[in-house]
Image (tube, rainbow, N blue to C red; front, side, top):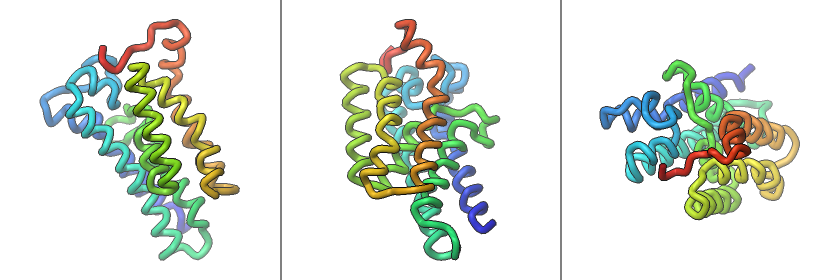
Length: 200
C-alpha cells in the first residue's frame, strides 16, 4: 500500500503538460493548432524551435523527477519496494499522466520525452544514447514518430543491458507499450505515406 502515494504523485507531475502550458503562455491554444496534439512536434510546427525546446525539456524533466521520487521513496520510506521497480513504476505513472493528464481533461501527448527523461535519470548512458539517436533520426528523417517508435523498441533491451531485471523490466515494457499505442494514428499515417514532418 505504501507505494501508491509516489505513484499518484508521479502521475500528477506527469499531468503537467508543457505542450499545453508553453503555447498558452504565448497566447496559443495548441488543441486548435496544427494537428491538435500537445507535443513537441506540433509545437515545433506551430510555434518554432524555441517553444518546442522548452516543451521537450519540460516533458523530459517530468520523467526524471518521477523516477527520482520512486528512488527516494523506495530508499527512505518503503520497507518492501525494490528501488528499480518503484522508480520505473513511477516513470510509467508520469508517462500515463502525460498521455492522459488530469489537469488538461485527459487530452495529452505521446509520452516519448517523458519516457526518455526517466531513462536518462535511471540509466544515464543508455538514456543519453537513446536521446541522441532520437534527435539524429528526427533531424535526418524530419519525422519524429519514426524516431520515437525506434526509441521504444530499444527501451526494454536498453534497461536490461543497464542491469535492470524482473518487475522493473515489466514496467519498462509497460512504458514502451503505452507510448507505442499512443502512436497508433502516426503508425497508420506512416503506413499510408501521409505522416507529417516536424517542419510542416
